Image (cartoon, rainbow, N blue to C red; front, side, top):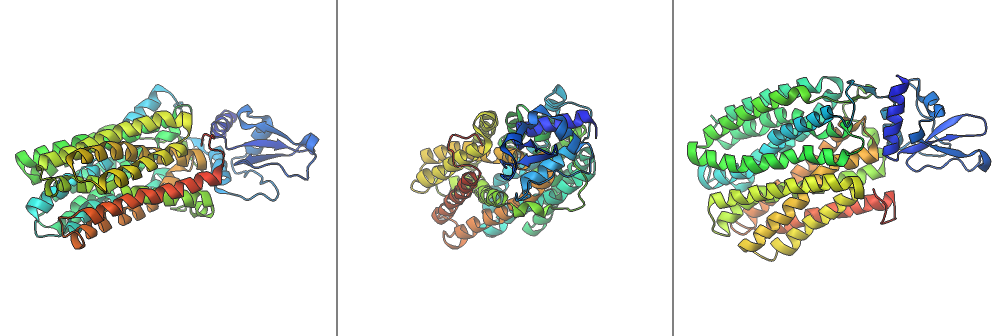
Length: 496
């Protein structure tokens, strides 16, 4: 490992406030992490803490050997922050391109496109659900039909867990290209399917496998390329999913109306394949961590902060898809609007989610990503509890679309930024891979129970029980995130 690389990594750690260097009276040095303090047994006169941003020679001496582990302060716990920071120090540059450079912005653009065509297509599934439920498969239950889109997302999460491992060990550009081809094949094959079960296999299972590669790469790469404007860059990249959901919703409805569902899927498959293939050369990581042969790094589960963060993510993801999937059919069944009007409501919600992602990305660098996660979760809960639960009018649905879309977009945008700030950069693909298990749990906890309530309690016409369930989910996420922040610091003015 070069000294230049060490200095750069130490500077990055300083930006994240991960720790400092302690030199004792014997001349030995120790890395301090996560707000640790030197052992009280040492002399006060010699307990000098040198900030990591100085990149002191003492710290360089510790890390010149790439296999060296930072010494743990006696009596201090070896927590996830220490483990990940050590990985950051040992990480090698995967490219000679500098962070915060014009090339870094090209990577952000590539990530935006990859998320636009992976998670964006999943965001637009509400249009397909409306078509299947009201036109193509009227005798199938809402719960069964919703499993097509749910399978899509769940498989993306499972695939994301493994693709995070693969992206650390293989070229992410190749993995994105492979995913693009599978995505195209899945939708083209789905265009020939005539049953819900076959659509689950193609539009759901196969597409989810393919989309997991550009999805996990587009989610985890942006934070590696920026040290100064990380929140803004990540917000721009993750706005791709909202942009994709916005234009894909309208485009899908128009294609279904004009050329039918089969050709709508073929066009979508071709566009997704070609676009993701085109941007794959820029889907590259900047840091390659020391090789860890474990597919999932379970050591983070020993950190209470990560467990609370995981709980907040699970319930936030569970809350995410419900309105997107149910608003189109709700507009037709309850408000007696047209199918186009219902899809336009999804387009509006996706559009506001783009603004939410950008706003949170900009503000996260100033107010702290976890603080914004908590604020947006509160807004999402308020939009459902205060507006949608007690009212069933056109005006309140538009208000729900505006507020919930903005808030939920900010929530999903800031999740990787919180992970990077609290748990480190170099292992972020594996951290995101572990979070995908949380996404998977959230996917199971979200749309399937909502759809079952609509079928069994609301008899496909009364959405009240389903809306109540949707409203409870962000409240649970809020409780977990507040507990995590309380564990990190009790100072309400701290940027965290």
